[in-house]
Amino acid sequence: MNAADEKLLAIAIDLAADAAAQGELPYGSLLADPDGTVLQRAHNTVVSSGDITAHPELKLARLAAATYPPERCATIVMYTSCQPCAMCAEVIARAGLRRVVFALSSEQLSALRPPGLAPATSADVTFDGPALTGRASELIRAHYR
Image (cartoon, rainbow, N blue to C red; front, side):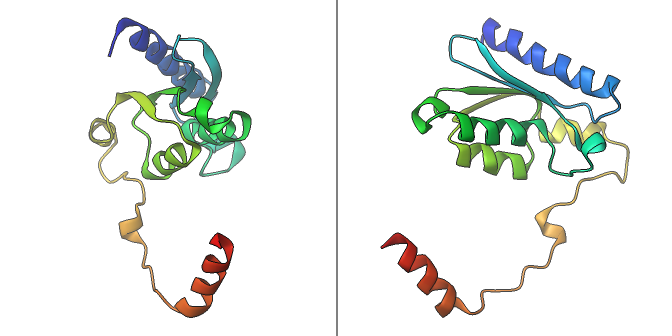
């Protein structure tokens, strides 16, 4: 990480502080070109929107995918106050973003949370399947022909 990365990461942390000041969860993110030009900013809006997926990383990844062609997404860097959760990380990857710079790791974030306050994970869900694979496979095969 270089000084330019640290400057942009500090802006993401400022966005997290802004979120907290507005009664939101304290997470902030931004997208920047490789030259450091800030393209978009976002902070967590889970509280005000009532949308549990309103993480800034997810919002920005969706925006990038909808706004920029894939070759441009591959050059954009996301700066974020905390390491993206699994949900956001998957959307970031699918959006074609190839670099994320974060301040706190998931482990550091977990250590700062009060005891007993842990986010739900896919380990907490029962997934039953596969089933009706023939029918589902036909649809997928037909799509990719």
